[in-house]
Image (tube, rainbow, N blue to C red; front, side, top):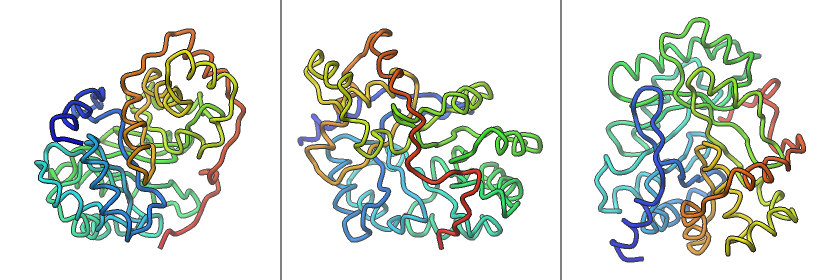
Length: 285
């Protein structure tokens, strides 16, 4: 893709303003389960396609590849929004973990830093949040947030927080929408970010999506991404295919009517794919 076409694709992606005034591209590129040795190429291709929001995590073990791609892209650092996350087993030492991520990424600041999972059995996430608040106050992070936090975890965090999380990144797709959690998050001014936004492909077989895709001259995946954008979710689909990268990014140009958004919302089935944050306790180390 030419630089001008990439710039046009990037400009077509809507931006959301977080609760601290920082803006985030609503459609980003996730690198969960992208092998470390493939990450540099994949992220480089995503940036060439027009993505300006990259989501990684220390637990993915591919931050160095993300950083290498950014360094080679020729893009200004301030033009790329970078998210990374604190590993569960490092909730007791968030600053050291953050510095390791920053070094791996090769950047001076992180745009969004998240506590990856609450791991309530550890009892450390409120303590970790205080350290994230310190990183934020020092300007090392432009925004701080959480991931996989359920209502009780949010309540516990907010009870002692000086900074309200900017984002809650959660599993969210048509067959598992976590409506009460999304509503509670937004009620506190916390933006909702969807991972596994296509249900890892499982949600794409729906006849409803097939009909909407035909009506819009789109693919079912594009319809689902358009639904996320239309309902206000930040969304981070993952692929290593340049064709799918372009296809996913083009979903920003699809506008679903309120009635069509409701049709997709009607696919709720309570179908969680990932771990349950209420009990998940893996260290990610």
